[in-house]
View 1 (cartoon, helix red, strand yellow):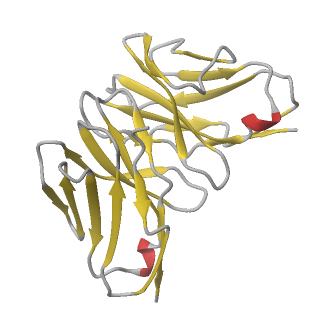
View 2 (cartoon, chains in turn orange, green):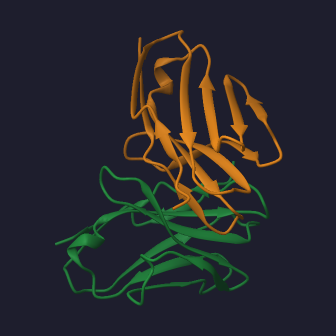
View 3 (cartoon, helix red, strand yellow):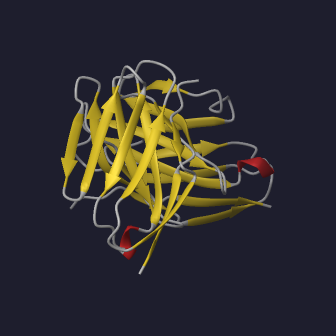
Length: 110
Length: 112
């Protein structure tokens, strides 16, 4: 299976700290995306990184991709209580089919 | 910002009945997707749709399921002869070419 798997499964930090989540996958991919899901809501796209890219930034988010290790990381800097959510990686060998991992539940304590 | 909208937000159906979940993708998007998320589990890909036909489907998407784009704006998922295990959140998503997917807020399907 190509599915990405995130770790840790759960992460609890204080507001202001950085949060790092990792995603590992098994087969070659074309792209990897990170999503956020608040409880009971849909998925919100955060960052898309393609297989020929190594790092991308968006505001307080930084995503890296290491295709040799088949892994990606999502770093949220200076976390806020509003960042509390589940974070998922989704891998695709094209843009027709994506595999989601089980997610990391992030809890940012005020 | 344009959104993907899904209706209804919650659907309760008797086992064995047919259900149709509706989605209005973002208007200039060309790729459409359905996913499901059983409570407490991961998001699972069901099907992708492009140019009026299915591009990819998962093992979950068997003969019980079908998708349709009946007009220029709606994208529907039909589930025939629903089973208890079909209870889940169903998410619709759309994207333009080689770009990220935008998700709706989902339809919670409860099979009794």
